[in-house]
Length: 83
Image 1 (cartoon, rainbow, N blue to C red):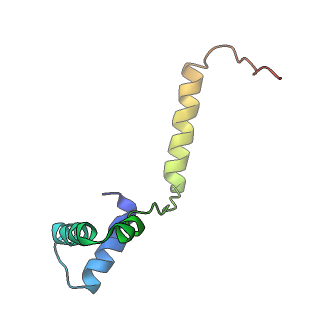
Image 2: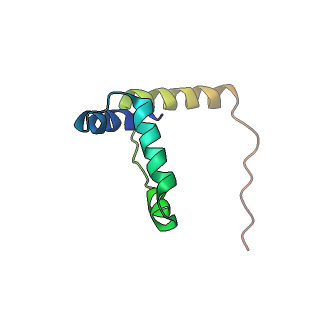
């Protein structure tokens, strides 16, 4: 499971007295399966969860990218044709 959801899931589990992560997954799946088509569609809608990497992760990515470019700068850059 994505780490971004862990704290939210733990909060919901605690609020409802659920202490087993597998239990909450089974409950969610049972509810999804038993719902009518429209409700399933609503439950499965894609809700974008914003993710912002930490400064440490961002800097490490930048440094690794720059090292890769230094090691292999690539070939000639060809501009796209203008039409």
